[in-house]
Image (tube, rainbow over all chains, first blue to last red; front, side, top):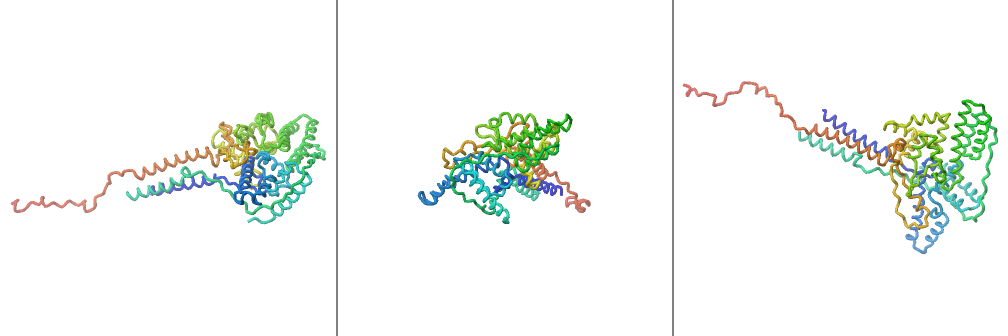
Length: 152
Length: 341
């Protein structure tokens, strides 16, 4: 009987250890809009920005591999890279700082993060404020509509 | 006995490989986005001058300390920097005109904290890299914070980011939240100092409590409280792992991401870092804890196995009732009658 009790105790120890290990696993959720962005810590924002920029650049660099070097898709990718890629224009620290400023306005928190990045890049490149403001207003409407939509 | 050994061996084989010490570090669970976000089609626009920033003064007149603090809190909550500055100026004028006493001292101490908040906020707004500050961007500010708010030193050390050149960067948003918490939770700076000093952990148990306290302070208010505290604790726990920079993926040399982003979150190997950092999810402290746990578990297992596999003493077999009867004489004992005769 003692041996059975000992065996059960050891088994429970192992199960508890496994459960404790499972609890400590971090859970990362990529931000979808400003509300989720503001939940992240500064370190998480920075690392996310680095990953975003590198992933974006990687995807753009591989488009011509899949579509052919002189295809319309490759030229579109090159043009898009010039217009909206963060690579070579802002650093991760700048991107985080820009998004922080952008989302510090409570009216912007519903704007999707992809739109926020593009708006910030246009701001950083010195586009006129009127156009930027129009884009922000449009993005707010889209963000509000997206927030009203039920998520699966 | 053989079945016991087999059972013990099976139990050992079942438990040990499933223990965390043998398992690999858990990979983070990444949730894909549920649905693609709507996208704004941006046209290429000509470059024009940007509009100037026009500060808006705080229109109301601040007459009492309570009103001053409320105005400052409201300005922060609504992200009204111009209103905050205006309210801070008015509150400073108010405190200068107040008679000497406890109320004046309390307000002055709070305003000192608010001035630090203002400096951080102004930096975050105006600097290109405003999300993080260092000694170059805000000279002496980190030392000033560490000297004035004792708990903040370990907090900053736990949340710092170190790039590959050894440059230490501190998050502006978290530091600001920490300072605001000092104002919200304690009426005076002296009291907050006392609180933070008493929160300095003297043992591992106290350290864990202090970490959760700090996590509770820095947790975002938009989340459910327990989730937010967990998230903040896990964020603070992110001091341990060293982030290895990814291999360059055909990026051009002019890529501005190449230099400053190959950063590493390094643990500070001082008592302060231990005080502020909770048991991390993945990292050296976690590995140490797992190692210690495994040693204890192995010792328990070894003890159990030794108990089960111990060589038994000679069995004390009780004689059967039949054996208790007088033994029957053997044939040799039987004396042949003829011989006897």
